[in-house]
Length: 60
Image (cartoon, rainbow, N blue to C red):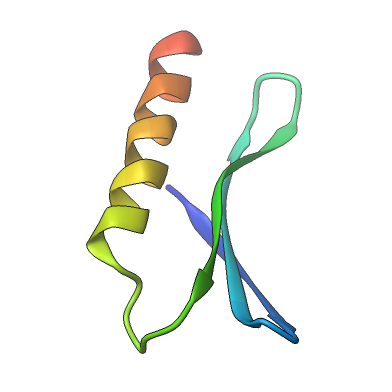
């Protein structure tokens, strides 16, 4: 499961998608971007989802 941080800055609203791992109790940043629309773009979600799957495969 990916989680989301919302940060407001001069460039707009940034989103950071991350997950937690019980192995070593780590927080892993999957992807960050500046959000310009109401919805998170599919492309941005796809990047985070791909990276999440890579992490799950590396830590079964």
